[in-house]
Amino acid sequence: MTTPQVMRIMALSINTAARAGSIIRDVMQRGNLGIVEKEGKDDLQTEADRSAQQCIIASLSRKFPNLKIIGEEGDSNLDVKPEWLVTDENEEFLKNCCPEEWREIKEEEFVVWVDPLDGTSEYTQGLLEHVTVLIGVAIKNRAVGGVIYQPYYKQSNGEIGRAIWGLKGLGTGGFKPTSPPKGQMIITTTRSHLTPLVQQALDALSPTEVIKVGGAGYKVLQLLEGRAHAYVFASPGCKRWDTCAPEAVLEAYGGILTDLAGVHYSYAAEVDYKNRMGVLATVPELKHSDIANQVPKDILDALRS
Ligand SMILES: Nc1ncnc2c1ncn2[C@@H]1O[C@H](COP(=O)(O)O)[C@@H](O)[C@H]1OP(=O)(O)O
Ligand SMILES: [Mg+2]
Ligand SMILES: [Mg+2]
Ligand SMILES: [Mg+2]
Image: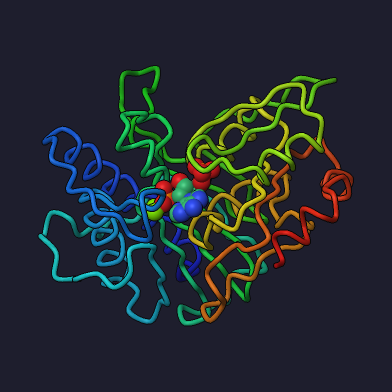
């Protein structure tokens, strides 16, 4: 029997994210980040963002030429150094059994959303543990599979970097699932894109504690590892590549990620990339709709306008 495409795409994404992670570490070690401002000082790009994206898109498109891939850093030159081309699919992952519902999905039915470096602002400031590589796999508008790779995570065996993955219908891997403390409401949110509206939404949810960290990937990790109950961001700043992989991993785990009104984003290729209605993610222990219902209407109206 041939291996279903979704399993092969996920398995190649895991190994490619790790390779992108080593490129990110190399750029930092060389010390010349090559920072440029995209839409302003809140929207930076570095040599690491560019090179990691080239590695990911070249590797995936070489093996899956009919795959639709959308990367944060725009069109990339795919004529990359041979050592950036990843061809091996992750064998550990391939030992898993493909969920029935994804078995027949063809290469051209997927959309892969790539954020080669999530947490660029933190990367440039040396807050390296906040940095992740995000590869999200969408099928029929929905985020279904995802890889969150942390290039600076120190494993207990001394190895550097770890890959966290999730596939709906199969589950998750690469981390130790942990429930957040009972009787509290710990919210994780932005540290580099705080606005009055972001603060207003936090206040409305009466958190017992607020954890400000960088990146959408790292914030969802706070939920997976029991350090926070919810991720709340009342801002249109995130785009589909920021949330596709985190949403898929969190939902494969039993949590939910939507906009602030409680509605899922579409990950179809032709959508407007902006997550205009913000981000709300919750752990499986919370009822997501209860939290969404606590978001004041004027905050939603402000995001809509
Ligand atoms: N105003 C913004 N402009 C550009 N990117 C943003 C903005 N707000 C959020 N993002 C993206 O969403 C991620 C999560 O946001 P935050 O850390 O503020 O919670 C950021 O790391 C950044 O992704 P990236 O670093 O890949 O550009
Ligand atoms: Mg960016
Ligand atoms: Mg990002
Ligand atoms: Mg990025």
